[in-house]
Image (cartoon, rainbow, N blue to C red; front, side):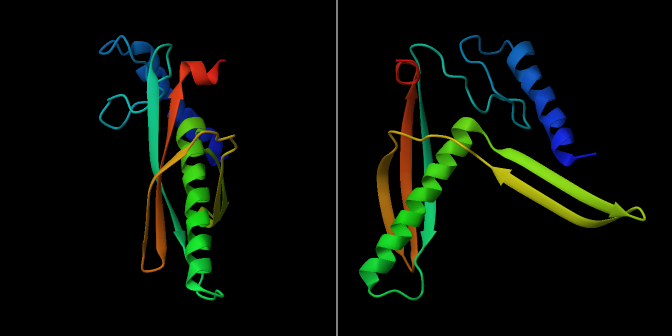
Length: 149
């Protein structure tokens, strides 16, 4: 049996429980609940705004023509990582796994993750560069009016 099917089933049950059966907060519905049962990700509703904040990281290459080029490449990598993190938070991550079992022993295990989204309107809040690591703090504001014009 594929792990992705089991994972989907495992994640569906808490989502149904949090979205349908919880009545603690009537104004916010949950996409899924955490291990403690509290709402983790709210569903976007009319008149509300959700701000997603992430920190992308990028490493400067060791061989560059100048320190400025190393900084620029590390910053670009951090921005791309930030966009990916925003897409993962907003759209979710597709996880596909496959295990190979022989003689009742695990011989090979592979896992692939993917996300596909169009990220528009993300803002860079802060950029730090220290010891070859660039960190870019990004945020995006999601509102009902921006999603449905």
